Image 1: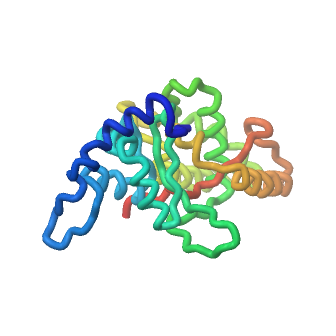
Image 2: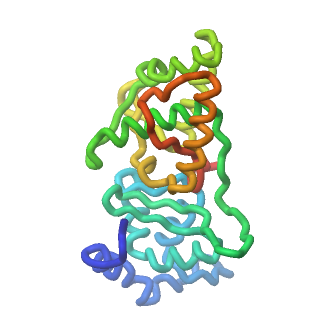
Length: 239
């Protein structure tokens, strides 16, 4: 994670010089009172819309996040949002801020997951964590379906019923930006954001629910004991 020191701090300082020289105060329309530069505003909107900003997929937005990180943090803090920047993965996203002893609105919505959704997330996260952080992780639809077939059997689903539910879960993961298309049909890249978006409290809560559901049907996890995950924070699709 970026700590605001070293090379990244120099890059941010250099990139933010335009705002200090007055570029950020140039009105874009007649009643514009904003103080952010145009590219920084674009980055702010992208972060709020989600699911995340990727240095590989959105290099200009990524440069704006690094260049005006402090200003973006300030604007997002005004909305009870926390900015997460990981320079190793070249990813940035926002999540609801946790404010002790205060009730504040949740700006970023969370999503309820079915049991099969959670099992699929576990499978994807397991595959991601097996690889080196610098590697792209590609998975196939068929192999992922086969890995989760045991859960369909445990719940008494026939092949048609399991396929229908698996396809719905797969579509949901793609919609949330956790799976990205590749040049090969039915092969998808797992987003490295899966390494970052789940805090210990969320993991603990879903682990308990996941294991409770497995115990009901007497089934072991497909990959042994693994930290489950749930979709929260910036996993809302653009609407």
